[in-house]
Length: 428
Ligand code: GUN
Ligand code: ZN
Image 1 (cartoon, rainbow, N blue to C red):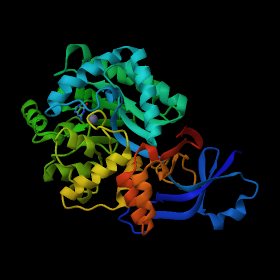
Image 2: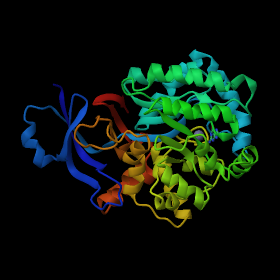
Image 3: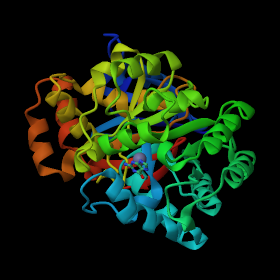
Image 4: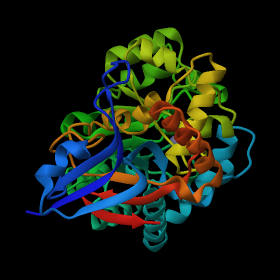
């Protein structure tokens, strides 16, 4: 048995912070890991007597936290971050479709996949739900790279058979066949998972959406990952294209795509009736504040999602999002909610970036906090490399104040180390 122990301050969440006892903070804590899984977490003075003979790695001024979960991101879009465009649909045509066309070449996809995963780890992100491209090889490339790192990645082949350039379109049939082959090759293989990934309602025929629904029923456990109600031009176009559906969410409902395995990115412009049905469906939402501000899409209504008990995680949505950091994403999530007169505290922000994200991905039995037996994906944070943050933390009045300043001010420089299943995967 391989046993390791890490001593530092430790913070994690045992549940949604609406439960007052959900947050656990140990000023002088220790996390013990056995064979890649969490064995124990607690206060150092309490656990130390039981750790005789175990090598304890100590991080002075460090803070250990569960690895971050990115609930929505596009790996091929690392090449188009910070590309100027007036709104979503124009941005997709001008930048997204041309860059994704390059991913028909496996070597281009493989290089981008390595870069992407390097950057996730550098930002303390240990799991993600990821859009690939329409090309099957681009999905293999990301799965292969994630498998080599033993990283929890869920991804899938983009389905799009209309309203996109011919070179990056599939057909309802080829989309179905290739998705099925990928599910058989990769789903539940080690730490990997598959998501059926229609880009959004506008780029799939009714037949393709129907076959996406069939893939879900034929493969229990496979996720559904798509975009929903991000932008006004988009929602108006969906109403024109699907005149028999009363609203955008109804399109996904019609084809059996609104399920507890479904993750919908954005959900910015859902009407109250849509939110009510969203909640009943058991689907989850990825809140992508950086992207929503960058494209001017709108302000996500977290209170509306909470009112219907929908699971909500944070998505960086690179490349419409401009950072792979969950810190940048928590910072903008805070500001978007402030603008909606809904003031979040640090526990809520870190919840959405860790356990909440794990719940969105259906992985909370495996990751998201330090409950005994979970896979030991964690980060060691250290503010020393950020002068402003270090100065602010020196004035912190409580753990809550310290965590809040960290959520708002930190970035990848604060990530000293990232561990995957107990193994060191990144060191600053
Ligand atoms: N909606 C459909 N495709 C995309 C995409 O690539 N990025 C964003 N932000 N929204 C989308
Ligand atoms: Zn997206």
